Amino acid sequence: MKNETKVRVMKPLEEMDMIDDFLFTEIMSDEKDGSEVCRMILSCVLGREVGEIHYTPQRVVPGMSESLHGIRMDAYVTEKGDDSGKGNGDISVYDIEPDNRSAKKEGLPRRSRYYGDLVDVQLLSTGIDYDKLPELITIFILSYDPFGEDALYYEAGSIIKTHPDIPYNDGIRRIFLYVNGKLPDNADEKEKKLMNLLRYIGSSTEDNVTDDATKRLNEIVTSTKAKKDIGIKYMKSWELAQDYIEQGRAEGREEGREEGRVEGREEGREEGRELGREEERANTLAERERAEKAEQRVRELEALLAEKSQT
Image (cartoon, rainbow, N blue to C red; front, side, top):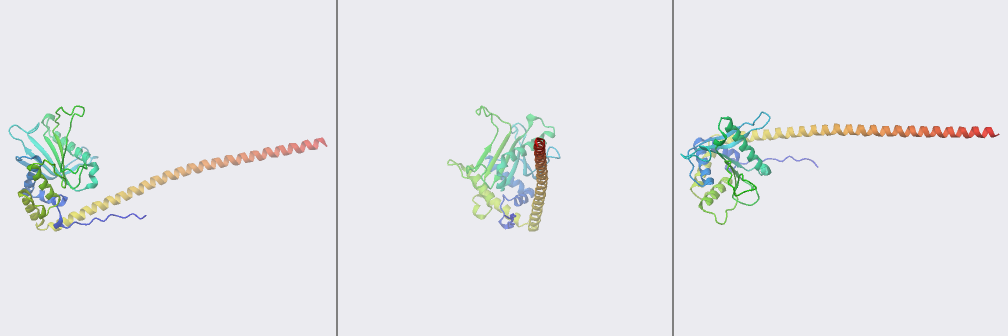
């Protein structure tokens, strides 16, 4: 059967949603809009007013060595604590990650772990003490249900597994939000506002403008799509992504060919060894046949001599 390459279709800019990487990145690239959107998302997710924040779009955190890949965080946000401090330090760190790549679903928990580990390593490299590490909250906004319970909100954290009732706070929270998830039966107003926000992020249309927050988001999305030269920028981004994909395919094909050559060489060596064993067996069989013929000839001569001696 002939291999078929999956054709990726370019989504029209006017149909893009906030959960799409290009549009979210463009919104985050505007300092005013990006800061406002981060504040809105954090306020809805955390269910409280958010203090003074500083955010960095598309922040790259290098791996711990050149051989280990780094990460690119869609929105890296820090929030200053109040007078009493937040968590174990005077700031909280948030990583906001919209994601519509359902093919990556199985690796999501470990990807979240890796992100958090690299952020901690970077913070420690600045000289901060362990007990001063800030609270780290990773927020994944997903177009797919990560755990199959059709829920709007999932949160993972560390516990003492043998004694779950004992408090254990390592300062890490991992929040997974499914944009099409269902509210619990006893949902309060905060949860309803979060649902409205997520519905709009997942499908950024007028139909999903349901409150003041989503109305403001829609204004930001509309103005972002109307920016000068954004269509050209989107086209270039698409072409670059296609180039990376094709490069990956080419590398994959070459790796496949090399694997085939390695397997072929190994098969050839095994065939050679088997041929050698067959040749050895054939030689042994031929020697046995020659020996048996020689013995038969000796017996015939002995019989002939015996017959002559009797006459």
